[in-house]
Length: 223
Ligand code: SF4
Ligand code: SF4
Image (tube, rainbow, N blue to C red; front, side):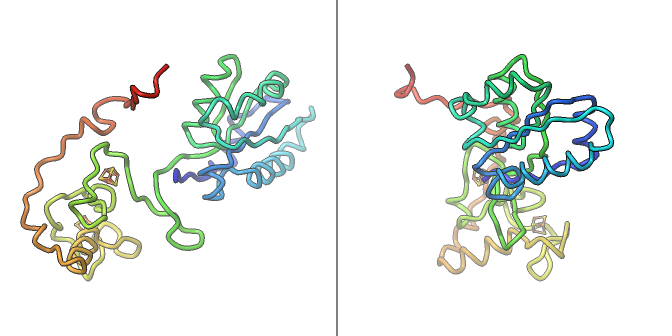
């Protein structure tokens, strides 16, 4: 899933300064699962904004909505009437959802309420961890299903650095396992340690964002 967290309240308040009619829109997919931007979080943020803004001389009207997937225009279409009524929209979706609203409603002012962080998974209650940075040329098959690009702090492809100690990463031993320890342990378990003799060539980053904004096309689905 895409993992995000809410921006600090002061930043959100600064972005909507002077707005007297606001629509807060959540998304019920990834950001709802990571408890950052679903319907519940829309209600909590809206209540917090009402409290924070109650001292203002003019009343602030806040509408609350949530859609199934803010990154797809079909789900946002029913918002048109509400968007026409307000001065600004505060999106609680990931950056893709925010940009979808901005493209779909070009005359509306759209502000992000979240900081989009990474693609990851829940590791434990209240903890989400990065697992993929979308390099566009997946190598998981060669590394026992553990991504050295994302999970090694230095994205090393040919074994660990000198900072791997007791299975922990030198960059943050308290929170990070050494990805290369994980890869070694997993390949040993699978009886595939010989894979480590292969020299991994330098990665061609053109398949990642380094090659510019990417686009996937399925010719068989095009109209
Ligand atoms: S190799 Fe690339 S696509 Fe595969 S998990 Fe790692 S970053 Fe994601
Ligand atoms: S300690 Fe392990 S995870 Fe950390 S940078 Fe070195 S090889 Fe990568």
